[in-house]
Length: 81
Image 1: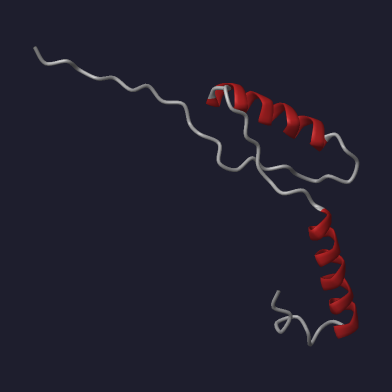
Image 2: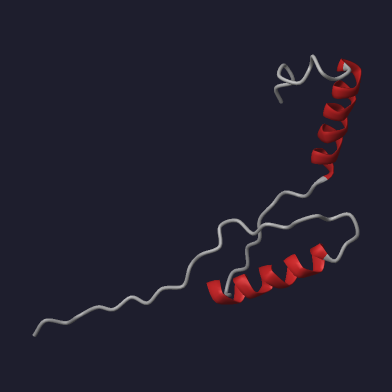
């Protein structure tokens, strides 16, 4: 975290305290990621959306972002006789 741009306007002790608090919170967070063998991408996306809605209902949670979501596509192969 670069504090040099705002260090002149704020108390350095306050900035250091915020930095320590962020580090503590980060260490408490679970490792991100969901895996589930035997489920399709569509099923995993549905479950991820469900988990997102449930987490957003927790007081103090401002946003939940799903990363790595795959877009659905259709593969069409043409057989040349």
